Image (tube, rainbow, N blue to C red; front, top):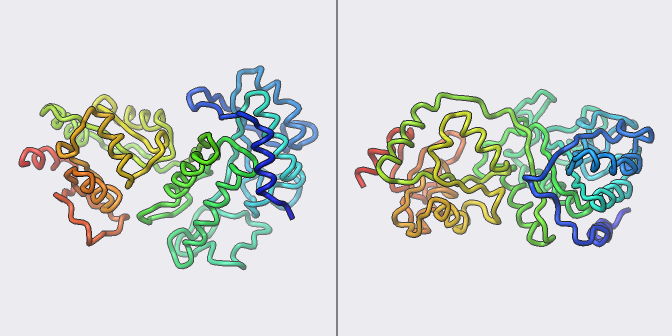
Length: 353
C-alpha cells in the first residue's frame, strides 16, 4: 500500500518554490525511460538531466510509464493507469526523477493513454463498463465515455490525470490520440479534464498543462467563413473567438492561419490561458475585453451549444445565435435569439437587428 497523499505532500515539499516552465519557453525532449540510459530506469535518466539542460531543453516528455506486462514496452499498451512501471523504478523512482528535474530547471511532461487499454493483462472489463462495442477503434472496442455507466468511467480518467499532478508534481500531461476517444456528449471528457486541471491549479499554486495529440482537424473549404467574417468587420463589428480548449494559443493561431482567417479575428480567448471555461460568465467577459467591448447588450455570441454558449451568453445580457450541431443534444429550456444553419446567414441577421 502507498499513501499517495503523504507522497504528494513530500513531492511538493521537495520541489520548494517550483512553478513550472512557461509554455512559450518550453523546448521538449521526448524520451523512453527504458532506452534512454544503460540502467533503463528513472534514476538512470535522472543522472543525465544535466546534459539535457545544457543542450537547451526545458521540458522532458516521458513516453507512457503506466504499468504494462514485462519489463520493457513502447508504453502505449499499459494496463494499469494508477501504477508506475516497477522495472523503471516504480512510484518512488518517478518522484525522485521529477524532483531532480525541477532542481535543474527542467519540467516533466508525461504521455498518458486514455483511448484504450493494452491487449495483454487488461482487467478493466471485469470490474465495470470501461469499454463499449458500440464504437471500434484501431485497438479494439472503444473506451466507454457516453454509454451506461460512463459517468464513473469518466471520473476514473479525470482522477488519474489529477493523480499524476498531485502525487508526482508533474508539470504537464500529453493525451495520446484523443481522436480515438469517441465522445459525442455535450460535455466532452476533454473538457472535464481541462476544467478539473484548471481547478487544481488554484490549489497547488501553479498551472499544470494538458496537451492533446489529435488528427481530427482537417482542412476544409473556408471561403464562405472568410467572406462572412469580412462582411461583419466591414460594418464596424469586431470578430472574436471564445473557446473551451486544452490547446495553446499558438496551435489555434496556426489552424486559423492555415485556413486563411487569422487576420480577420480581432481578439481571442482560450480556456487554456484563463481560469474559467464556458459557461462561466467570466469567460464571456474575458472575450468581450479581448475585442474592446464593455456592454454585453452590444454583443452577439454565436455557438453550437444551447447551454454553454446560448444560455450563458444570454444570462450575461448578450444576444445569442445557435448554429445547431448534430453531435450536440438539444436543450429545450433554452430559446436562442435566432437559429441559423450556416455562418453566411449571420451578416443579414445582424443587419435586421
